Amino acid sequence: MSGKNVTEVRLADAAGIAEAARILESGGLVAVPTETVYGLAARADSAEAVAKIYAAKGRPDFNPLIVHVTGLAQAERYAEFSPEARALAAAHWPGPLTLVLPRRPDAGLAEAVTAGLPTVALRAPAHPVMQALLATCGFPLAAPSANRSGFISPTTADHVCASLDGRIDMVLDGGPTSAGVESTIVAVRADGSVEELRPGPLAIGVQTDGDSIEARLEAPGQLASHYAPGKPVRLNATGAEPDEFLIGFGPVAGDVTLSESGDLAEAAARLYAALHEAARASQPRIAVASVPDDGVGRAINDRLRRAAA
Ligand code: TXA
Ligand code: MG
Image 1 (cartoon, rainbow, N blue to C red):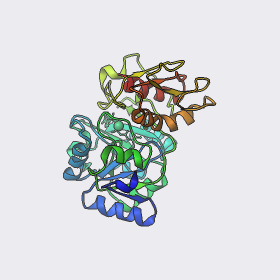
Image 2 (cartoon, protein in one colour):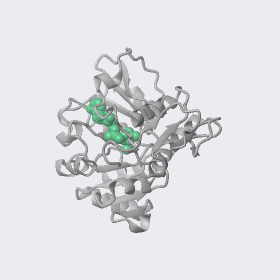
Image 3 (cartoon, rainbow, N blue to C red):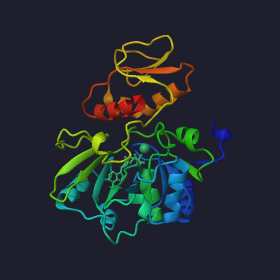
Image 4 (cartoon, rainbow, N blue to C red):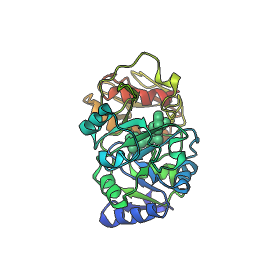
């Protein structure tokens, strides 16, 4: 598949990272590996560069982007950190945690990054390639998941090409991602309270008030239909109908399995690859075994519900 790509796919070695930094510096788009999913990066301080992200993805302009930084020191240039926010960053960065915080008036970020909101979403990714790239660039990188808006997120360079080939300048290939689902997003309020906006690999002990996140649309990208494989998806399956491709888990064996041993971290890492495979399969429908709703299982079920919506 890689042989036919129009967009150049480069190994994420030192030369590949240097080339990616050059493209980004001049306002181009590069798909980059993180520990969660591949991101579609552009410099966050350039309106022209950020506009290209929305165009390449077909992303609605009301849906703001996560700004990626090397760590807390850089993040403090863009947002107001309360003591609670600083403690979360200290405990979990670099890692799969995104903090939604009040944006600093002098942040110097392109307006489109925050879609007009007074807040900004910040994350310091742990992936060594992304860390090296951010350090080389010096400027922050806006990066949503590197897929066409509404479709399945990418955990390999091939997944990125399947969705965005010819629409972006380069893919930096760092191999399959390890966590497999997008970062946990929490908002830290002025009063210090913390609210989870999107479940992810990190379970932060936050109180939710029972009001559904979807209803409030606080993370505007958390739309009901997302991660769509382009076919009907049936959840909590114990077996396959004749016209279904079955994604198994634990005792439910499938055409593929998220984890034969019932391991949730393994299931998260394999989730999007399984959905990509199911989308490509000959069967017109997809069925998925049930996955326990604890730990990262909450993030898996959140994504599966949207894939089925
Ligand atoms: O793991 C991840 O978070 C990946 C990698 C590439 O870092 N990125 C990612 O980006 O998942 P994206 O654009 O697919 O999802 C970002 C989510 C969207 O639901 C968006 O609405 C929300 O973050 N978001 C961004 N800025 C926000 C803000 N200021 N307030 C509330 N939600 C925000
Ligand atoms: Mg996404």
